[in-house]
Image (tube, rainbow, N blue to C red; front, side, top):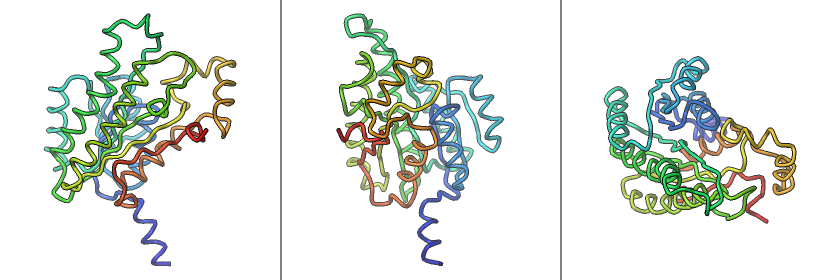
Length: 256
């Protein structure tokens, strides 16, 4: 029984400081709630103040702070403030994301830049800031990629999202190698379509929902908690020998 309990404890993050960007709703909030259940002190970062207010009601134990991850100066300030309050950062979940769904020939450069600024540059700046406040024993970063960062497929043209998530996959591997000597593990989760506000327009279309089922071997969307479980695993001591990995949570989409 003691050996079994020791194995289960490896999935806990007791006493660790977990920071989640885009943490006020959807997958981010599911990650925050699961991290809290697993023993972490949780910090929610989000640019949506109304969503943060709602998240505070669902998770009153968490610290919540407004942050636009595309503002590099604000990122440095906020992470320094978190370290001042909590003493360090142990876990970062880079979940903030943006999508502007347009065909390539109709996509203004400013829209491309806006997506990349959040999904790729923002993730890099947050990772760098978090790493600078991680203890000597190291820490864990989990980036929220996408199965679309590993595939050109999808329901409609969305090139800036695909490209930024593909860049995030490669950035995950590069940082994993660079920061391994410091004990900082860097991994990514690559979800399928997940039932959140982020893709709410899709869920209102019976035709698109049928296409999702047809494209997915498990024939359904993911739930936020299912993605959060993969994030917790990668962030926890249970994944102590895992770095540079990209874990699909895609119902078999990429296996086809």
